[in-house]
Image (tube, rainbow, N blue to C red; front, side):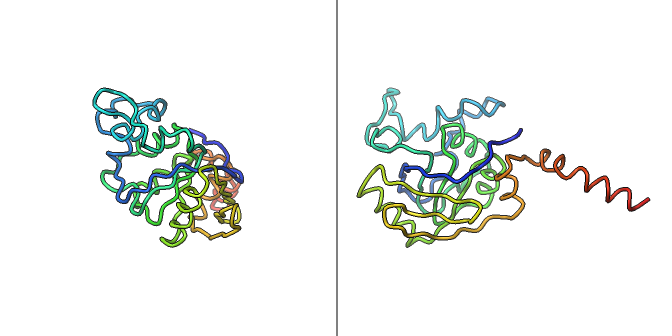
Length: 197
């Protein structure tokens, strides 16, 4: 499955300032029956977004109209728990392109990168600055430059770098999944094979 190319992003953000958000909270197990990647966004944070009567909980950030954008900001240790890839599917399907936290579970981070979702790990101090900017102005803008590997708070001009595997960076910038990448280097593969004969 090809993924959209990730270009420079300027967006507001949705804050979920909760630590240890696990994959069962991101997408509860009862919604894992589908095998296609579409539709999981409808149940993103289902048990936090809706009460037992299936009514929206207005205090939860995703239900609060003052928060918009394609950046999700979570607390420390985001994506812990089980290794379900559906968690990344749900966040991406909802419309988020970036998730920011001060720490990600490794399996979630890899699942995100494999599905076109950019996880950006920042320091705890910088994460608090992001939350403070959103609290000050819910429509605060943030700039993500994948090529330069920077995340900036537009209102203050403060910026931080982030790490990303070079291969995954190339895939995101070009909209490649693993198969697309192999196709893109097909001439080099053929040349290598020819050199061995």
